[in-house]
Length: 145
Image (tube, rainbow, N blue to C red; front, side, top):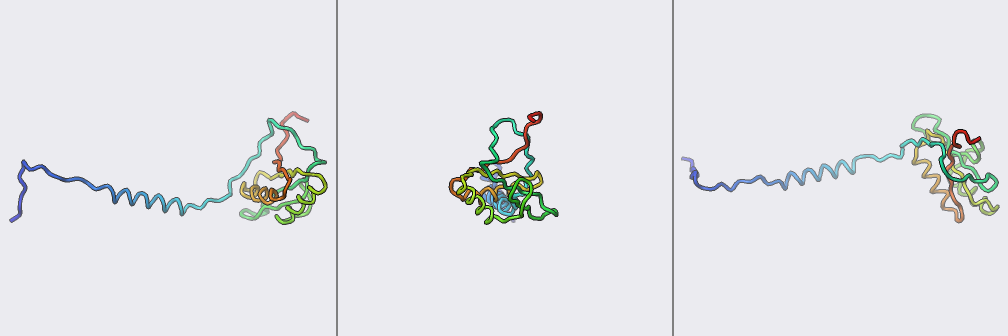
């Protein structure tokens, strides 16, 4: 025979939420660590609204061209849209040589299809040279010519 509780007896029932909260936090942690953060965000460089231009005689240009194939690597050129393809070490050397020549500004231009992470990688490499200031190349405002 089953024992029955008296109807007048107060019941002490509750749901323990601790295990459910633990599972939720574990799922959140799993999602946080399993999401792959890529530097593939595209940067659409808008026309400049404010600012002062940099004299080309005081700067060197580095140009990042979009990858030849989707998922490929951006090409870094030494020059204003044309010039030899170089690596990060050669870009650092070119910046150091420019500083010795009295040109302390590096103008970094990138095609709109170059991932933002690639631009940051080049900027970080060049900024290792002491005395260099990095400027981002933007389009001239419409009607400024």
